[in-house]
Length: 139
Image (cartoon, rainbow, N blue to C red):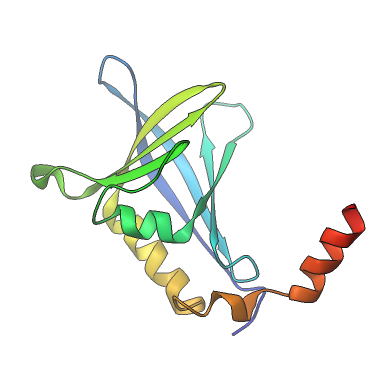
């Protein structure tokens, strides 16, 4: 498989605001085979630059079936009566956010990432020489 393979998807999701109403948002998910453990998510809110978060692919995958995550990122499935939603809670020094993400397009996106880099084969897609060079160059 090509190390430069990229999988992407746009998702229409909802930001849950304090009074429990929701605000529709657009997000873009991106997965690159040369960074096989990470999923980048860009949240578009208005005309501002997107807000970027990087998640462990496994965190999003496990969060579809059970609550997972500590600290800044938590992911969990919707309630039994709303099982087509995945919740993503983010916390930073700038504030907290809770998103309701539609399960079908997120699950499809994750499925496509595992076709590119199967679970357990992530180390095969990391260029260790380049990573070592980056570490040594910055010191």
